[in-house]
Length: 131
Image 1 (cartoon, rainbow, N blue to C red):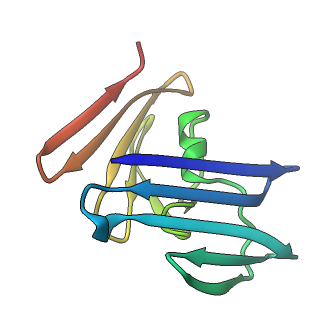
Image 2 (image 1 turned 30 degrees about the vertical axis):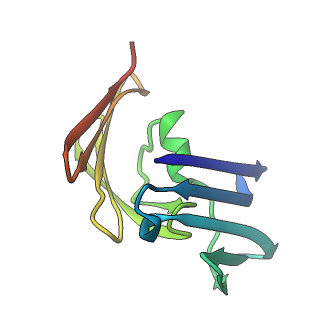
């Protein structure tokens, strides 16, 4: 599997985001973009389906989880799913990201820095650790 996610923020607001996933099973391929088109409005396209996101101010994306602990945040924008997803605090410094297809992951932080990510997959758990 190959994935790529990019985001552009301006004054803390998401202006544009893209996500690409090329999966060995083509049914899991993703091409998604979101572009700010007005106050709390975004044009969203995912796998060829376009629509408008209304009344949302997107300030925190899944990719931001790699760079800062999401203190007090309960929803983040997923560029891959092109929608808001739930972020559930499990314990001090530990958060579960809940996705629409139940590819959930657990992010763990120490002193505000990401130390590891655990992702359940069909073949087992994948753990990425900061060294």
